[in-house]
Length: 172
View 1 (cartoon, one colour):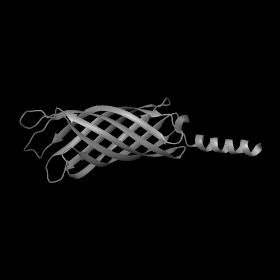
View 2 (spheres, helix red, strand yellow):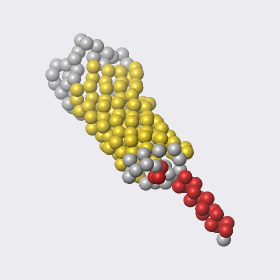
View 3 (cartoon, helix red, strand yellow):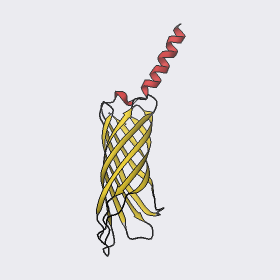
View 4 (spheres, one colour):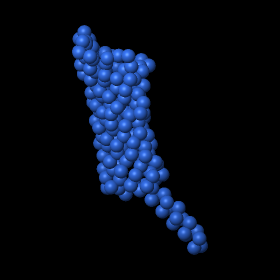
């Protein structure tokens, strides 16, 4: 009987040890790793960040900033999105779903003056707790942009792109 109780206690301790549900605050930081767009664009550079703060009741707020420059082109895009997300109460992994809205701006080399448009996204993130204080996660973002002003004054239809990212979360 003692062995069963010790085994159940040890298994429960290991499962609860890796859950961030006891954290008062969680801060996550990530970077974009890949960017794919509908038009099969090739990128020259990709940079940016993903920031998120999760409150004790599994809801959180975040900011995404993604900068990309197309290969062989003088255009550079910047996507800024503000997110709200929810972490599912699963003890072994950290599964997050989120929605966000923001803007996209495209800048040329000066010969073409592009404007701003709107952006929205849904995303998911899967995290693996390393220690009770740290979490490594990967994310998938599906971004829809529309109403981007073209140099001739017209506005674009909606276009879709996807972003894969990775990062760490710190639980306090």
